[in-house]
Length: 305
Image 1 (cartoon, one colour):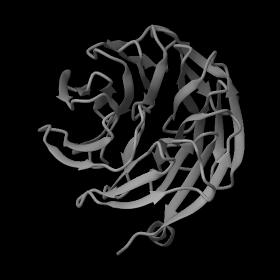
Image 2 (image 1 turned 45 degrees about the horizontal axis):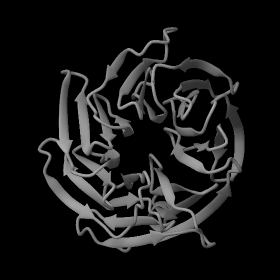
Image 3 (image 1 turned 90 degrees about the vertical axis):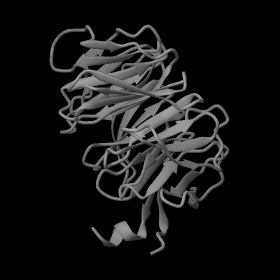
């Protein structure tokens, strides 16, 4: 069956350039990070801004909502990681261990730990429940800036401009590094946890077997232009998604590696599509484009819910 993608919303976030957009764990809300040093919490389905969080001293680069949606962790060019109380809008903790701008942040599954990656080449783990300002652990294996971190139930996945993706197995304390060749702008797990989706600066998204490191597929056609483009799988683990410098959201079939869609909004854009987020329970996509976020859904997911 052909999947039809339907454009749903275009929201002007009014916070400068949107550096990243993230669905909450249950998909009810999303968070946008702005170049105006602020975060915003949204109901994207109604295009309603619910709260604004101000406290970073420079551009906010990434954010992550906790599993119960009561807290948000954010990071920015001011070298800090901030833990926010969603309801009050106030900072609960501020972590300042990084020596460079912090570009990526995630909670672990229980939302007890915050994992951040920085241009200081390190990944740091912070205890969100203790009063300590010190990092619990510093992973300093990368030789260049960290572009993304992802956390599964027992692994931390980091991508670096040094051309490697590193998987840290927390249970046994092992590090597995895969050399991809070009600067890695984003790496994420597939939903089944078997593979890695890796975006590289050579305008190729690669699908890699997590255990063997074998290259399973290459997805091309989009343009990077030295941007830190994000990629992902869709909800059904059957499509690969990537941002692109041409302002579109590119979608490939995971098996055939053919382009199946290039999604855009109603109006032409001169901005790249950089950050993307996939709904945790259905095929609904968010993407940042300049000061806007765009939303699409699929015909299949609007009927099978």
